[in-house]
Image (cartoon, rainbow, N blue to C red; front, side, top):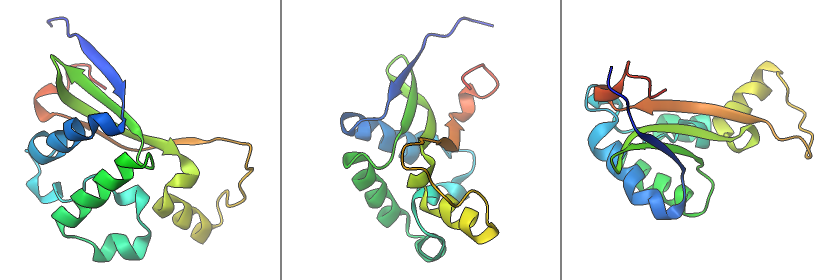
Length: 134
């Protein structure tokens, strides 16, 4: 196995273009039926998630969330190209997750001083899966 030089960068508004290119061209080239997601599932409430299936609307909303800092995570790069994405944020910022927890009565009380991080999604370029990126 050849040695990879992978760089991990925190998602910032300046990296939004790289993130969008990853989702537009790379992330779901082996599952095009999932390409509409733009990693919004955790950020939308259940009703909006079920109704909002237009990929361009979702793409635009994701870009807005990146620009305002609400969507957070990390990009994995090799040779300046994004090969992976990890959607990680404060748990309370995932509307879908918090709604689900409330519905089942799981950890609904939040301590404002307690930060709990959650990973909602992790994607690796199909060409790099099984090569140690994760």
